[in-house]
Image 1 (tube, rainbow, N blue to C red):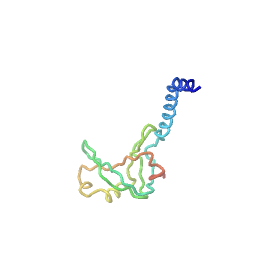
Image 2: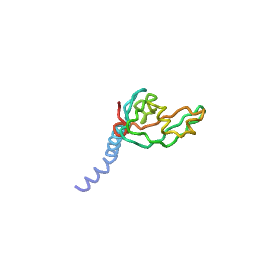
Image 3: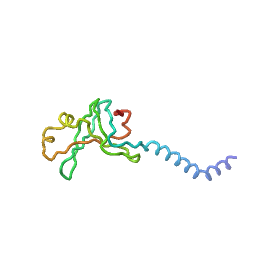
Image 4: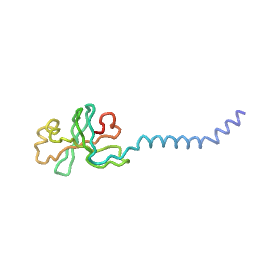
Length: 132
């Protein structure tokens, strides 16, 4: 009986491996498939969190600097984010006030400074940002 059981295990192991991979793949797809988010959608920051602000310049470059998104800040989605993307690009609704508070004077007074944006993972929706 043990021999028959062992032969069955040897013969069936590739099928069990395939089944396990199919199930794992389905679980990974569910975790990475995100909702599409349209340009203009607004989100409110529900708790302070540190992130990197992308600084845009009137030149062929982009830079970044550390900043804190404060609770209550309203972010606006800057471009459509289809289901295949895991993040959204946002700008503060009141960009001038945000820049005055968070961006160093040397940067904001530079004539080539063109603004800021943030890349926020969709997984943050419901934890650090919520739809308005």
